Length: 511
Image 1 (cartoon, rainbow, N blue to C red):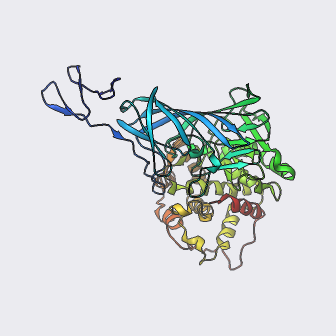
Image 2: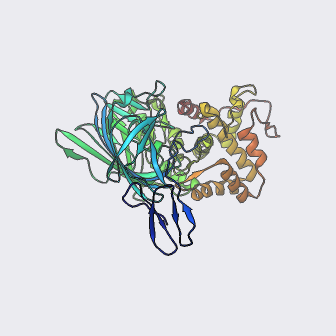
Image 3: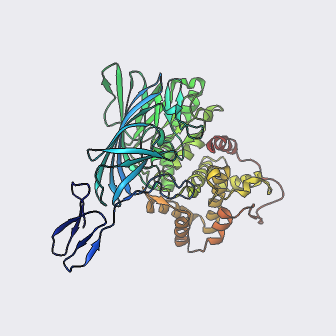
């Protein structure tokens, strides 16, 4: 094994005789046989992980194990100051590497040595360490920074939503850029410690559990501390800062349940509580279909009236916009976001073009909940959804399996994705279908998956060739023909659950 010691320019080669010989990077060093061995010079880490839709998201050359995000936030000015410590391992010899980040950086240290920085592209922070990094080396990267996230725009937009009493850091496929430096792609998951100092009387909610109660600080301030020990994609880390009522409980199995409700909800609060307080019940039901719940805590956040207009499956604790409660309680959105804890959070996309594996599965979970509640079968919901889109509707031109970067959250990814799963269920039968679901979440637990991998698993369990089905429903434009003896010329009636599901989806497909 070749290693670099403390001298930044020294490259060391281990000969067969066990002697360490020093030489400049890229220079030939003599071996025991007298033949030179060329040591490749360290290279910059790639500025992206090569995602088909978002090629500059994430970075190459290192793998993150943990983020320690320590912040101070001023709600009156939206001023955020922070120090994020990143624990990582180099996956190649590095002369520099990138972090995805937007705020102003005061300093970066790598293993205690101050590094130089520059920016590139829209969100790339280029870090050049004082000493060359070798493959397999443990890295401690400390970034100090500050800024006003709501005024830091990309294309006129910020994923940091300022509210009357605080802020929300919630968005997909990117939100980390505005509050902590990261390797921002689902392929590089990590654990998190997140702590935020705010004026006393302001609450902060984030992922996981509170390892200690809020800590009083000087200057009439309080520090809120959150920890998640499960691998988490960066876009699934979140902050909700403001005036919240926090309700805590435990499940029958002893798992923490932490729900939070913005005090601005007013008349919407009862409907929000009637929905979110059923989270533990819904997760218990979903566990029977999808396998054991993958995380250490559960709950939900009902955001303020001036917050987000959608919901997001932020890990362990989805965040919901107020629109979901305007017509009363809606458990379907709670089912949807918590199904994502398996499909999207534990098993994340390997590339964003595979997003139907998140949204199609979460949408189909709503259909299964409708069956469970006696409000319409999955077949009835399939029939009504299918008939809701005429054959010449643009809906059928979006390919759920490859929708394109501009349509990554198109309604077809949700609805046609769910229809594809129902066709799979019909093709393989209920026994095989309900074996496939937990087999998928087990095989890729805390990892990533692709459509090809899911198809291969389904074929292995069912013993069927499913290529035509997947091609037709996920990768072929136009409305598939589902004519059968079971269908009639009379349009199907709307199932009882349809209005609530449609109401939720109008907000969920927010982009």
